[in-house]
Amino acid sequence: MLGLDVTVIVIVVIAILLLFSGIKTVPQGFAFTVERFGRYTKTLTPGLNIIVPFIDRIGRKINIMEQVLDIPTQEVITRDNASVAADAVSFYQVLNAAEAAYQVSNLEQALLNLTMTNIRSVMGSMDLDELLSNRDAINDRLLKVVDQAAAPWGIKITRVEIKDIAPPVDLVEAMGRQMKAEREKRADILEAEGSRNSQILRAEGAKQSAILEAEGRRDAAFRDAEARERLAEAEAKATQMMSVAIAEGDTSAINYFVAQKYTEALGQIASAPNQKVILMPLEASSLIGSLGGIGAIAQEVFGKDGGNGSTAQKRVPGQPPRTSTTPDYSAAPKGDQDT
Image (tube, rainbow, N blue to C red; front, side, top):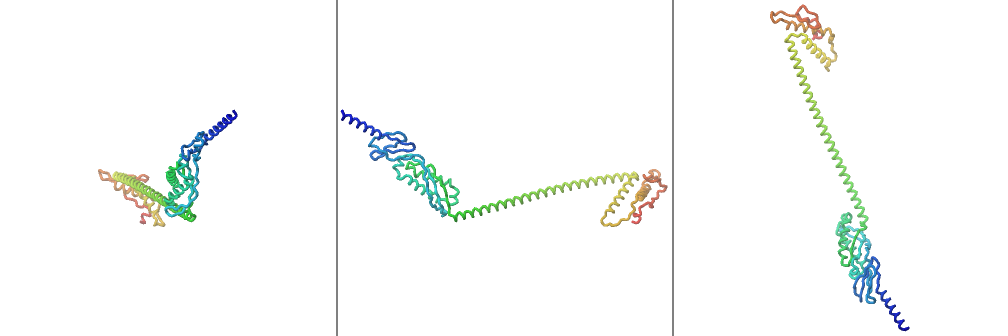
């Protein structure tokens, strides 16, 4: 009985050992490959897994989480023969653990060299200006090329980013001078455009001012012509009325007309620029006497009766009746006599 008990205990211990050796626990974010007699058979996913003890064994432990690969700085010669230093960072994830384990040796080194080579290829096919201004295009091209090359390894390249592009110092100084010259050129262009617009606006203002001034002169000329026309009409009407008055023998109208012309003539003589001293009798009695003489002449001419041809005396308003039809020139102004 003692030997049987020992045998049973040994069998139980061996069974427990076999059970524990056949149970494998895979942590989250990893995948284990199983090899049977050195050949890949299956991939263990995260969790509790059972394999055949002493026949199957764990081959590779693959990290299936997204990983970061730092690309070191390297020299790149652009299409226009400019030398720049560039570094990058790459993000990748294992999608197929078996391919990542058995299709390539040293996965990270392979991805590093693949990314560096494609960086030189992509950036070397571009000019320096295009290289500095189109980082997004460079990243897209690198991502597409590297992802396509790493696909047989069961790798998914999720992102490739250029971190820094450093041109040489002398090239940076030349670019600074070029940028300064370009900005000065733009400033000169803007200043010239501003001056041109200002001159155009001033010319437009002068044009509008000239147009308005011409329209003002035209309106003024029209109004002056209208005023002269109305004045001529008034003078014509006054002349017509005076002719009617003379025909009817109205001496008061004649006296008014002559007095008006007399005073206007005196005003023109007084305002003449070539006259320095004027000696003329301007007494009111002399002016009235001259008007009375003119009225007497008009009575002699127009005061006859239509039937018997006798002379009819008409009294001038403001003058005493005269007994003779002979014109009295004694009342004329002395200035007229001197003339």
